[in-house]
Structures are given as structure tokens and as C-alpha cells.
Image (tube, rainbow, N blue to C red):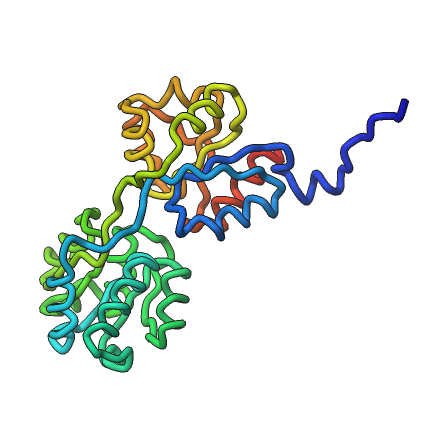
Length: 277
């Protein structure tokens, strides 16, 4: 009878998630890079998309804003989605990326900045933290002080439902901030609830990830509950940032894993580090 082989310690060190199952609740169209990062650490990844990125109910407000870009001093993009939909509507309206050359551009997060550069759009400001409070501070610092925001005009293409902290803060500083819906996040129709529930209840899942407040809310809605504590008992909860973690707390969840940087590669690394310990 052959002897059982002991795990290779070097392999375990390189793949700390080997033998672990991680659930991703991100939109299916955006989960491939995150899944690949987790798999690189050895994880088995299970997709449970709780949001889907779709067109807004009407493109009219966004199209009108694009037609009047000359009236804006700044464009603020808060995600790769906002870049993708905005640039698509520019192209649909016969506009070219060069029309943004005279407008200052703020990109929230390195992935958003990279997507803009790929579209041949310059980026002036990338805040160190990817939340509205830090964006306002980064803009004020770039301009030389909060008072320099007065009378500037900002266009913020974003999700149809989003936090209003940045527009409010800009307006309180004397700026004008126009928010237009570039896309919507909706609950998908294809999530296999029965399969996911069987994995969760059966103890087959080690960690579940939430990459936005919407993923938390829609996951709870999928299971028709305001209290996720019992369903996710003994499962580690990983949230991409403090806003998502606060939403998780609203559903009676404690966040076990949260990276310092609000990106999916950083979240994957934080999960790997947690289980390596």
C-alpha cells in the first residue's frame, strides 16, 4: 500500500489558498481577473454574481452632457464601468477622445486610470484612496486648496444609484457637480441560489467576497433576509473597503478580511495572507 504523500511546504507557501473555496459575488462580466488572482493562490473559485452591469434607463442625460463638454472643467470617473459607457456614448455621438484634452480628468483607482489611458484620455488625478471623501481631498490638494474649487464645473458619469458624498462636498465648496447615469447595477436573473445555498450550508465554502455595497445588498435579497449572520456562519467575510464593510455590518456580518488598498488584486492578496496565517 503506497504511503500518503505529505503536502509540499513550498507549494503551500506559494498557494496558501490551496484546498480553500472562495465565493465571488461580483458581476460575472468583471470577475475573471479577480478569479484568476485567487486561483493563482490555489483557491477553488465559485461564482455567485449578485449584480449585473446594464445600460441606464435612458442615455439622454449622458448624451446631453457629452454634447456640452465645453461647459465642464473636470470629469470624474469612479469606475471602469463609467469609462466604458461614457466612451461608448461619445463614439455613438460621433465624438472623439481628443475632445477631452482640454478637460481635467480624475480617475478613482488605478484600473480606472488605466482604462482611460487605453482610450487615449489623459489622467490628472488618481486619489490615494478610492472613496468619495479622499477624492474630494485629492482634488482640493491638486488645485491648491478647497477655495480653488469655487465656480468650477464637474461632470460625474456614474451608476444610476450611487453615494452622493462627492457631489455634495463639491457643491458645498462652491463648485457645480452634475451627476449623470452612465450605467445601472441590477440583480441578475441567472444566479443559481439552490447550488450556492447548498455549498454555504454544507460547509463547502471558506470565504465569501463582497466588492461593493450592491453585492452585499443583492446577496441578502437573493436569500430574502436582512440578517446574513446565520447563513454565513463559520465562513470568513472579505470586503474590498470600509464602505462595503459598513454595508455588511448592516446585515449583521463582521468583516474578517479587508485590504488597505481598495482593489481586487489587493483583496485576493489579503485573503491569501489571512489563510496563510
